[in-house]
Length: 113
Length: 115
Image (tube, rainbow over all chains, first blue to last red; front, top):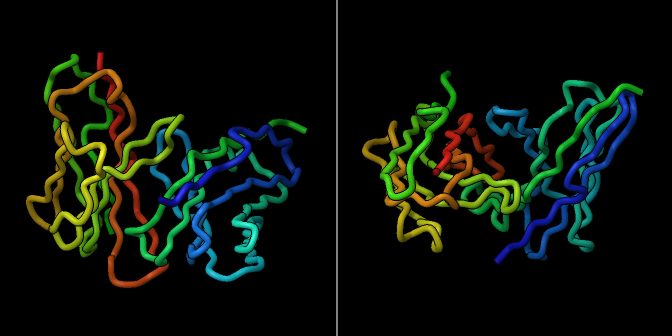
């Protein structure tokens, strides 16, 4: 059974700084990797996803995937107060939503620089 | 388009009570999911429906948890009887169910507190 673990559990990030969130998975046959963001009391919303090894950038957010290391990460640059949220990583063996396994999340807490 | 709607937003129950949580998926979506979210365990899948058919019932949650899809636009999750360890946020999500790399659309959840 797929195990997905996130680190750290929480992160205090100065406004304007860059931060990295980590996700490791156990199933080497995994094909689809995604990040969801959940603001306090709100619904989780899809942020970004990737299939292939390498990097994908969208605005201030970059996903980096290394399948051989069973690891992918989310990098957030120029941290903003609106980034305050719980970030959930998710992994699927098949690429279908029905096979997604989620991590427990990393809570990002922006602070004044 | 309306998103996923969950009611109620908050529920308080006494131990042993029966509670029913409700979910309306995004119109036209074929897949519907129920998850339980806690700080320790994260998101745990409780049930998964495809075109109203139950595809997965979450193993460990079978005995007191029962999800149903009465029609393509309405689902319920019944917990009977409730126990204090059931205190959590219950999330409903839907997806089109036709392609890979599909996004899950979540509701805002029901926060359940069992006393």
